[in-house]
Length: 173
Image (cartoon, rainbow, N blue to C red):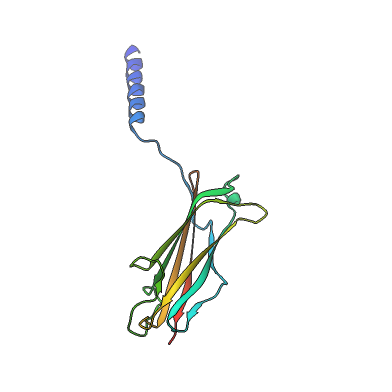
């Protein structure tokens, strides 16, 4: 019996020592459609091919997360990633030239916008963030159909809410 107690004590000491070496795990709540993202107004974005800069406002409406987690009244950070592409199922570019550009985007057509300390209220039923972006059409911009992919992520105290949407974009002759 004495040996059994010594063995159990040794196992307990080894388990405590190992647990001190292993980094603690952090639980995270991820809701994949906790935010709704849409353009304002909700329509297909069409440019008539005349050279110039065209402004469009994207509205990021964050649904209140109180349905999933109580007492979340704001987020530490919100990140919106905007990607303009021709590589999708129904995207077609009919003329040669350079692809349509978003002012300030990287070479892959991606623009990232971030907000911090976003507060929400029950009276407003969530939060609304406006993201103005500018499309640049030049004389050599390829005419056809593009897709604007929107992806957002909000963080607060180990919580992550995600949302996505897509908007068709056309550049006509």
